[in-house]
Length: 323
Image (cartoon, helix red, strand yellow):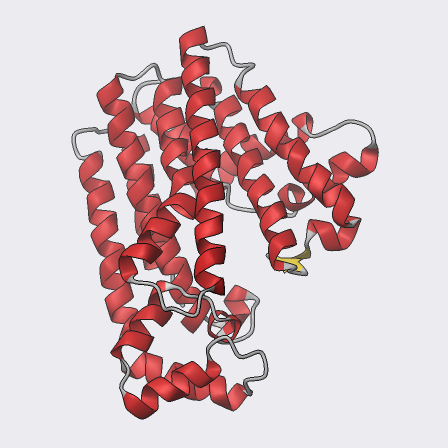
């Protein structure tokens, strides 16, 4: 965590310096979620991937900042689509600044990301590859977001493979490109870029699987959301899919009564969560997260050094997060 926090401070200073300008409200909105804090995991992965492959971290700061801008762009627009009022304990951008400014703030973050990543001192071929990969990841995120919306609007319960495909695009794409961009900033060989991409992708899947578990069974004091929030909202995440498929007769009815029901009582939620715990869903989800973590670990097994240890420590942190 010390390493992550140290890196976050470096990235934060750079981000804030790039998100200044007039009109003042526009840049205040664009930087609103950034200045409220955050671990900056994706920039951390850019910097450490670069370092592990022998590159200088100063060459990766632009790419690291660009990926965080894109990430925050997705958060701003995601909150608009979901009409959420809070994000990690602070008011969402559209609730604080209004819808028009929030949309423009997201657009500024997206545009600034490309402005920043294309102004590095790397070779023109490296810059082109950075821009190309970042653009592809943004397309993947948009496709993943629509898959998520389609799954939410459908009456059908999606298969596990459909869920994995959705989070590969919506979440893992930015983790994947973070590691790839870090490798590119180190002027790494194509094989190294591929290995780091695989590490990031599998870490991203493990991250989202664990995040979804916390969203269902997590402590509200930690998540800052009501107990069983994802269940009440009808989120078709892996823990809920497994629970619905595994539960029988009356137990399934109890889960479905609470699932996606905004009028469900706290007692309804607690009964459903009790069944989910009894079905040992946490154990199953943890095992799957570990499986993707092992794939990630295998991708970088041939490397060495302190930066590799930091990436593996991050991987361990991601999959072992407590409820």
